[in-house]
Length: 298
Ligand code: MG
Image (cartoon, rainbow, N blue to C red):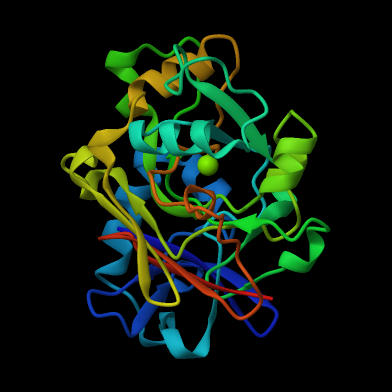
């Protein structure tokens, strides 16, 4: 299922996208008392999804809304903790970042021996079509990073690789917008990655059952229509089971937690000289069948 969080006037709920693209079903208008928050719904696990699948087949007319009449928010508009992210997780990007001079943490080799995990503040999250406030970066060095986001379903600690996909609820698209000069200046990446509005997410949360092989998903980032990133998720240096095993080894993962898996080659600092985002630029990150995440820089 393709789940969205939407706003209509001051009413917020979860929607299921119809098979066409023009309508959605408001799950709070279905029989069976569904929650309005995505984290609460994800916490219901497979039981919630099974119940929802049955309920949508019997959706009353008032549950069906036109997409044009709602505002899509990030699928999880307010994560309960920081978004966990992975640095240098595609080979060619690891090289471009290493060679760019912007990586203050760089060792001698571009490809790390172990996953590099950092986080973005929950307040950095914005939805599809929301504006990226590049003016909050005093160093004028905002850059895009198109990424596949993994949403955790069943939580846990000490999750082994072979069990990892049992803990994946679904997938979304993330733009890990980064203020490059802040990332470099402060050594630790948190400030440069966490500015308000620097984590566009969405448009949908595609449940894991709809994805046969996540490695076959393809990620494309375009800026003003020009393709900058085009890569297969199978090119990840550390795959999703490795990331889940690594993070959960001593940290409890909870339903609705989000892992941004890293970005492929083609970011702005890979150009010589670097090309940073500027007001008016439109960044579109597409991973089908999750959808396209489009945001305008202001
Ligand atoms: Mg990133």
